[in-house]
Image 1 (cartoon, protein in one colour):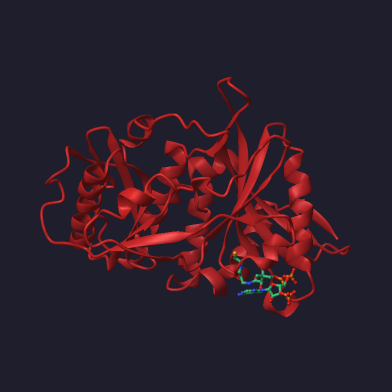
Image 2 (cartoon, helix red, strand yellow):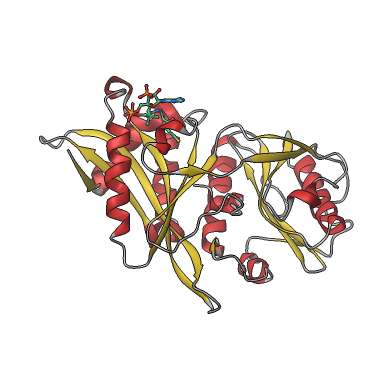
Length: 317
Ligand SMILES: CC(C)(COP(=O)(O)OP(=O)(O)OC[C@H]1O[C@@H](n2cnc3c(N)ncnc32)[C@H](O)[C@@H]1OP(=O)(O)O)[C@@H](O)C(=O)NCCC(=O)NCCS
């Protein structure tokens, strides 16, 4: 068995095979168009690869994708060193081929491959199938909790300084404080826009109105969000809140945007820094995350992946 990079034709063939898992409620044609469009997005063009585990005759046994994701490594007291981490998505084995260890073999070969990248720091994935499968290949999970809020009627801009649009992403992320941890995963504006591209695609294909804003600011605090068109849920992609009041104001804006966009709820991924603030947001309820469980492994010595590593929803692929 060997791991190879898919050609464009092979990527399209995989789209047809993975439709059953990730396609509906889009049509087959709609899903194929979604995949083409997401691959054409600047963030994907800059660092997305599709991998195939093949048998000796070239038959495809399993597949997955990797997205190059910015990360920062601090060595001692020096400034952080930017590097590449790799977020793994769409791990897939056709039903008829399951249970033969192909996904595990692919993940094992992939980590060897990723370690060869010159600036490799860590590999990251979001498991929808629990943790045992990926633990076998060296990944370790970090705690995954969600906070949920109900949409609220009202003027989205009330109680915040401003709403953010899709041309504000660079400026919004630049407001964040540089991370002081030994290692951090740090999304770019292009990566956040890739989430908005998903929103655009679902909105067009399902005829769903897009939210009127994709974020808000108050004081030094910033939030970015997207509507997950497939589920009608507004998810916070990024929450940099400096106080419980700021968190409440930003989430209030998200709740009002969600209401106007017809979303069923607002979802926030808990991070170590935001947990105590979210606990003080009126109406927010906490529960274990169902799926999308972040799991990581280091790709080089010196990358310390602590249990309290913040994983922003913007990093999800
Ligand atoms: C998950 C998947 C990739 C596993 O592929 P595979 O080639 O059969 O994987 P392996 O043979 O290496 O390992 C199979 C193990 O995965 C486990 N597994 C598969 N699907 C699972 C699920 N939905 N929940 C929990 N465990 C699951 C199996 O129970 C099996 O465990 P065991 O060996 O202890 O019995 C495949 O089932 C698949 O494509 N599923 C649909 C897409 C999907 O959910 N992908 C994962 C996204 S994170």
